[in-house]
Length: 327
Image (cartoon, rainbow, N blue to C red; front, side):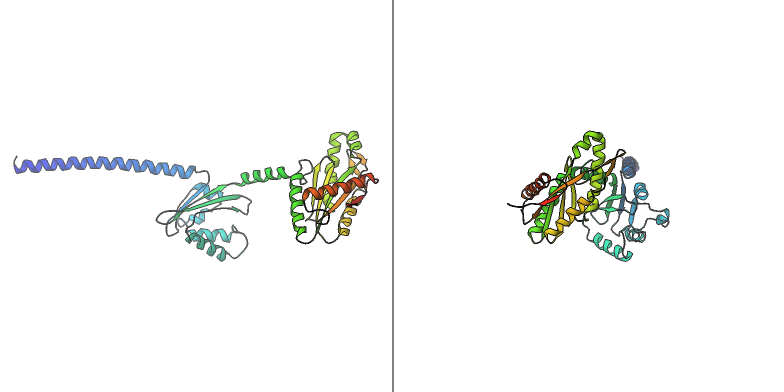
């Protein structure tokens, strides 16, 4: 083969190799474009906000969901994507982080970011929305942050928790929550102090319930609950234990006479008749009182003593209160 033929052969081979390389490059570019399209689809269809910051804490991307959820105005992006500090400063200025000096809010958050620790927390926005925020540092610098609206989820959880600890009719604490509050009050009293348990039973409730029906009886129970709540302080607990049985955990008292004051105030609330279904209903309240740690130091013990005192009140003529007496 002559020199000219060799050159022609080499040139042809080089062109073939170049053509092959171009085809491979084209395939790679197509694959890269497809992956970019998939990534963009993931970002824009993410069920919440998503933002990415580089190692200089400058925003690389922010999806539309985040802009809408956190109410970012168009002016924030007028000169390109903001830095993380710009974003913190914007939020601090509009009260997103609550009261306080905006510079302090920004400095505190920048210091946390520089630690490059993964984080998960919730923030309640001024409009009441609860946002779950998750941040994860990226290898080589920068980090990604996601924002999810968990407002409805948290409200549902709170509602379920409330229903589990409150009476469905009167919305008073039920026996479960009452027992928990009682246990706490007894523990505090054992360390020094005094507390009282008032067991209450409505006098002549059954005849009213039989006369006015269950609807009238329920209406009366709701009204009774309201009058009981009006009788106590904020740190006391009024509970419905079931039927026409109620109870009060009275804390922060100094002597037995303080419990007597509350019992008299409760009974005075029942001096006026109740209006139920267009009828005037007159009822009374019998009360039994036990004190901790004087009469007991466990929930079962103190409740038994209060119930014993309640029996004395009812057998002694009703519409009265009695303290537990060991003899």
